[in-house]
Image (cartoon, rainbow, N blue to C red):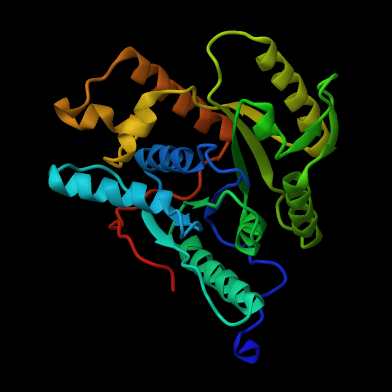
Length: 296
C-alpha cells in the first residue's frame, strides 16, 4: 500500500492571496469552533470571501455550526452571509503513515484550491496533536490559540512554578509552533503571527486573574506570541450554536432572539478580538454562492 501513496512535500505551499487563520490548541473545550465561526461571519460582513475548513472530522463542531446556519436560513427564509466550507475526512489505510500522508495531501489540495478564490481561510483544528494539525500550522499566516483563563489551560503553552507562578519551560505545543516557525523562516515565508486569546475571563479582579496575566506576559516574551482578550462566559454562545447564528446576526433574525445589553457587550468583544488580530485587508469582496462540500 505504501508505494501507492505519493509523498507530500516537506513543507506546504504558502503562496497565494488568501490569508489563512488557523485555530489551534491541543486542549478541547477552549472555544476554537465558536471563535472560528464568529471571526468568519465578521469578515463576511465586511464583504470578504471567507472559506472554512474543519480538520476535526470526528467531532465536526465547525461543520455542524455552519450546517445549522444553512438550515436555519433556509427554514426561516433569511439572507445571512455564510462561509464556504469543507471537511478533511479521516483516512483509514493499512499503514498509519500512509493515512497521514493522504490526509496531508488532501489538506494541501484544499488550501491550494481556495487560496485563489477567497480572501480568508479559517481552519479549525482538533484538540489533540496530529500530523494534520501540524501541517495546518505550516500554512498559517495567523495562529489563534483560544484558552480558558486557568492554569490548567496554560499548561498547554508552558509549565509554571506553583509557588512563584514563573514560567519554568515552554510546553509541547509551544515547541511544535516553534518548529513550524523555523521551517517557514527557512523557506523565506512570512512569519506566523501567533495570537493567544484569553477566553472566559471573570468579570471581577482576583488573585488568579493577576497570576495568569503575569505568567502569560512572561511566556509571551519568551516564546513570541501576542495576547488579546477573548470572550467572557456567556450562555448566549451555546444557545446560538443550534441555530448556526453568531452574535453579529441578532439584528437580522427578527423576534426570535431579543437583543439584550449582555448581547451588545458580547458583540463588542467580537469586534475587539478581530481588530486585535490585525488581519489587514486582502483583495475585494465577491458574490460567490456559499456551498458545503467535502474536500477531495
